[in-house]
Amino acid sequence: MRKILLIGATGFVGQHIREVLAADMGLELRVTARQPTTVDTQTIPFDFHYPASWQHILDVAPDIIVNAAGYGVVKEQTDLEAMYDVNYRLPVRLIKFLHAAGQEPFWLQVGTAFEYDLTEERLHEDSACVPLTHYGMSKYLCSNFLQSTANSLPFLILRPFAMFGPYESDSKLLPYLLNAQKMARPIQLSSGKQERDYFYVRDLACFINYLINNGLHELDGAVLNVGSGHPTSLKDLATSLSKFIPDFRSEIWKWGEVAQRANETQVFYNASTKATQLKLQLTPSSQAFQETISYYYQQR
Image (cartoon, rainbow, N blue to C red; front, side):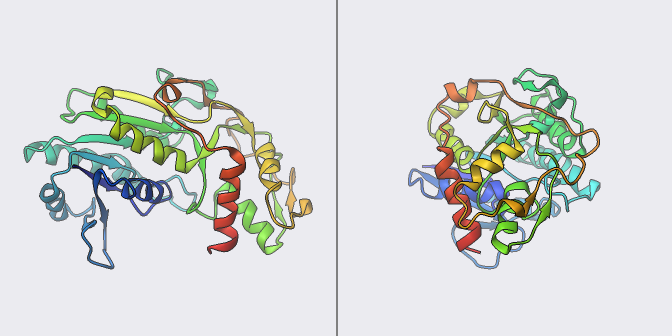
């Protein structure tokens, strides 16, 4: 039975990966926690910032490490030192630590589409990596290390585009829209003409699970974009979502009342079909929207 270690299991993406991998009876899953509140067989204490805790990873001796840790995608996360530590410097040090200790697990890196030059709009795996944000740059630096000769681990870099679903920060678009409806609190929005490539976060988790069980090592050294492959305007996305919202009130969402952010890219999306060829399955939008709404309306 292969041993999988998931770093970042408490984050938006990490929680979905944890749920999917934990349900796979053919895997032995371990997850990290900086301060475990309970002692169980699945959780190990680990903190990137405290190398003394890294020994716990050596004790597990995982076959595969899924790194879903990230800092800076949520607008409240603005500490640049923390961003470059969590997204780049500390993962690199951990990789070097593992190699020095004689362990070489497969490293599955959850990167981001923000590693690319987003002015290109149609993005493929060989598109230029010219990050426009510190978040994108810090993630790209880790990817660049993995692809360099200094890296000693087999690896795969996944670059997901925009995701939505349960557990997302309230400051992100869909939770922001849904909470406004739930609380009947009008919110001012931009025109919503910006076009993005949104897909259900659970689909990324299921894709990772599929790859782990179907030739992950054959993808050593690869980069894979993960997205729907179709740009959709934020307003159109919200309109589709609204069809499933109980007692929806259109006047709550005040489109066009604030200016678009300066230098914000108007359109970018995944134009690659590689993930689809590798059996990426996308949940129907109606189901994805209903499950997301259910979480924010009933489970919180």
